[in-house]
Length: 411
Image (spheres, helix red, strand yellow):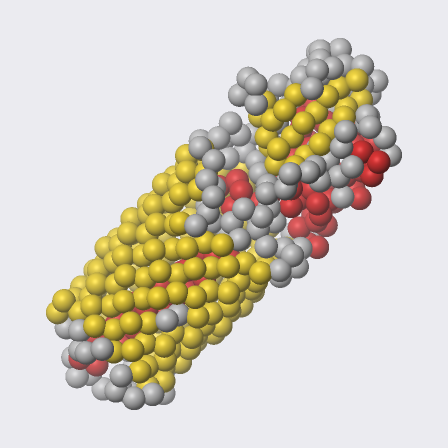
């Protein structure tokens, strides 16, 4: 039998503030975190010498004790046989020989986990712990969608400004004072909800291009057995370049940086978080059929790196190393958008954007995401108002729907 589950077990040890000590009894808490497939319960360790099956976030887990006394504790005199399966794979991650034996004591599990921390992280969290815990899409996909969405909005306000016969060389600024989003999602039968707030600032410079920044804050809560919660913050400064090829074709180029933080909580770990940083480039060519209708073809790339700073207890050094060892997670983004002007200052937009992660560190279950956005925006003299709907598709056993309201001030 294969012994991969210590993989999943160790990560939770690593992530649990209540498990920071190196006492062997910590393994009892981690093993009890497996949601048992027979009883549906989580929080009890079956050291009854009978094979048990269950799940631990992304991973499928099988374990069986030898010498277990049925007291719900993993004692030093007991040993366990374990296997963990990564989503999308039919075979367990690690063979029993990798650990040096079929049944392992708590100390042997710890030693083995130090050597396989990278595999453990990917098995349980699919390279993106925050997305796994919250049930939402991965960070790199979220950044891609929000940058493209923001650029499309800025194109509208540029066009509206020009339609009002304002000089293109006149300084122009806009401030999104409220951009709230309420979303509901379902992942493998587990429901969740999120609240998001976005704040952006655009400043037109003398050459007609824009500089600005996007700030996004999101809180997510899942109804799983772990009581999982996640908080995400993102800051993305950007520069937008406008180029008009002719009366029909315009291209917007965007270069952006990304700085973010992710924090997660559950019954298995508390206040575990990491930073993210990266950059992106996007190009959005638009074709104007007439004064009312236009189409766009967004194309871009984003890259993100996760990082945990020092200060973590030595007992979780291996999980810190696993996250820091992850390479840059890269995505390519492409799509199709349509814009229709009901009136010169009233627009309707329909966009489809697909984000595909590339490379060995792509997420196991959410490497391809498709966003569909529908929104309408009304532009007044100083204030703009928008309503929108977004849905996420193309992820197995996952759905997400969101509603958005926005108020923007221009001067």
